[in-house]
Amino acid sequence: MGSFSIWHWLIVLLVVVLVFGTKKLGNLGKDMGSAIKGFKEGMKTEDDKPATGTAPGTPSQQISGQTIEGEVKSKSESKV
Image (cartoon, rainbow, N blue to C red; front, side, top):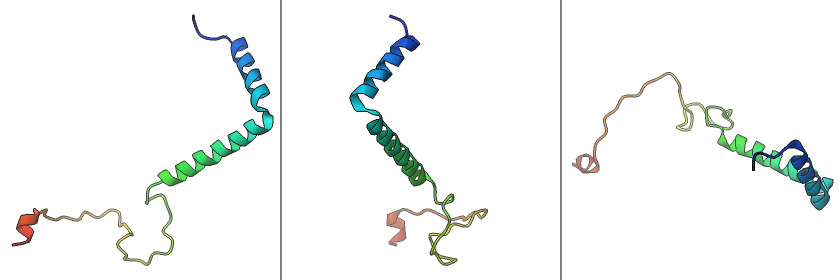
């Protein structure tokens, strides 16, 4: 009950090709590739994406290299 040899994997691959056909497997590979590419593009951070359509100074634009100091107050203190 060890690992499978190369012959076992070749037989499994042959059965998969016979069942699904090469055209379906090719389409499946293309679909998976485009899905992975879309996922990677979706996971990019705002720093990685180019700023398109935003004017300088808008809140969505981040300025790197600056530290903004502030004080956090609770809601009860800010209403006073």
